[in-house]
Image 1: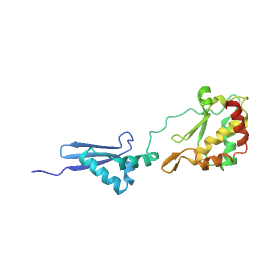
Image 2: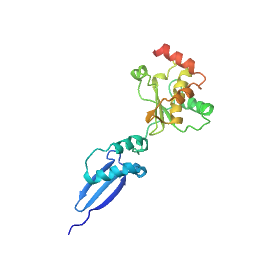
Image 3: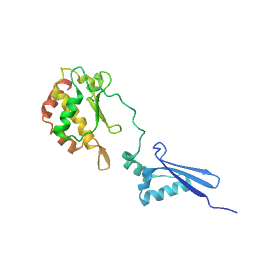
Image 4: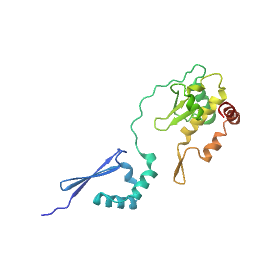
Length: 204
């Protein structure tokens, strides 16, 4: 007597294998990432066809994953040693001052000097970075010198704090890190023009 296969569905946070199908006897085990719980009818129909055949093109599924990639859960961030006191500048003092003046104290990100003296990174303008994953601002230790004016260091920190405040926007289906709104808000920093001019002279 022929019996219909039973289907077991397991919801996971595994972003490495978003959708997998395995047959075990008369049962089918489907493992899918939890972001598919909000998929529309078109995506669900394509998923059903894929589960049945385990092959074929899946453009709607791929588009859905790309569109919702920011929702993928990542592994818990590794602990990072926080070091705000440099030889010349204390990042916590600068951060707290900017947070109060420009953000109403709402930025909760941590800030630290990065590791090593990354001159190559400085030439590429990577003087600071912000990780949305662990809410951490890193500042290139090359800036921890009296040869770098405080207003320029403040400008770099303010730039990364903007990333923490605004997140990553989507413009016309594409991720935009430095949107028009971001650039406009960057100019709110009182020493913006002065900092940009110093950077052009120093690393231009």
